[in-house]
Length: 174
Image (cartoon, rainbow, N blue to C red):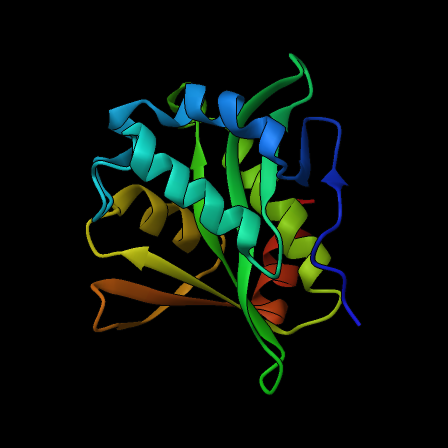
């Protein structure tokens, strides 16, 4: 069976399982209100709301990754797998934020590539829930080959990346 609580890394970034002692470093990044302006929960940058967000990651049965920039050995955000579907053999990726300093760089791609390469060893489908107003994330997932399936009742778009689409995208970039 798949182990969701792994350590993933490449030369640029390390994804380690989030621990309580990461909270201060995560909040240093996540307390920037601009990060949350396209989210439904625009106040996630406030300490109590951010605490609930991180607690959700710590309690997530599929784990939660703290993202570390290996060049400077600094916490720059978080992401996670969630909503494992045994029948469909699929998973969701989300609850991601990275420091505004990394927006428009290759960092989000490096993070998602690690996660997708790992998970596609086991599954053929990965889903993303993205707030209707989170245009940055929608654009990013579409660059990864994500297909917008529907607008859900919770004001989130459901995106799907299929293993075959991902592998074709990666092979054309090599």
